[in-house]
Image 1 (tube, rainbow, N blue to C red):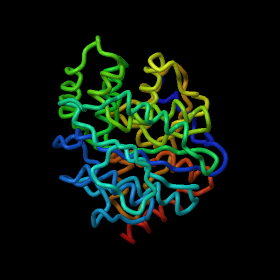
Image 2: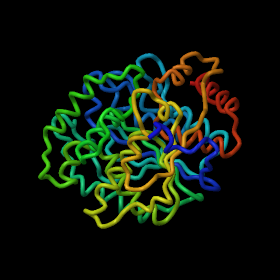
Image 3: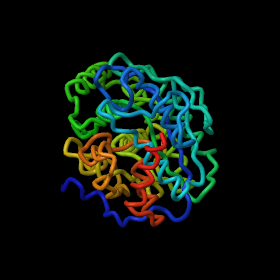
Image 4: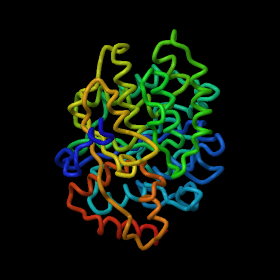
Length: 351
């Protein structure tokens, strides 16, 4: 198969109308393994989802004096999502606390009594079936404010846990997962994933395996999709991590005797993920038992005045905090690349 032919072209339409925006924010202690992620400030990586939640909600952060950024200075894709909201507002922005070390300030937060998960190389120590069930229950109860839902995530080291989760479930996805790095630290990621997979065996149930190698965001969102997709349309805002949510839900459908109503689910990501030479999100999606609805946008920082933003086009950061679907939402609402770029740069100048 051609690498990208599972994706439709950029003219693909999101559902009509206004979208609610939910951010699934979570910490896996896998992110504390030195060198495994650059999704945030070194030594403070677990704070990244808290800062992302504060910024997309308030256009400022409270839990630290600065936004999360990579060690090379590339700022969080939360800037993209907030810029979209400023130009064509979401009907709401709300946060799912799926195991945060620090509660975001001045945000509408849903709490589920979930604590940060352990590092997968030593056992994530999650009651996977319980977290999945909490997601299903929230999927039954969530009250839509607009016409459909955009579901994004902020989970540092989440591509590592996503790869371990899908490999543990038997999917053919080795080397398919992306990274916030331009030069991916494959040795560290591979060692971590191999250590995690060594803790599971084929006699374990799907949920037992996931309890060792997964993270709360993946499990909760997979459960949420099963129930919520019966009720309204959902755009999964993200790259390979959100693709992993679909694979998890697809694998456990026989355990729970339910499956996603996939006609109501779309995945929207950035071109930086879709065309990443170091990963293959299309191949991940091809593992599903159905053909998913997936698209990417062609937004570019090529004309940015702030030089550091051009690193996105070079392959750093790539996706997160709902950026892919936010870009699609902006395009759907006739916001030009130029207008969005100016808004993003203005936000940086105001920091």
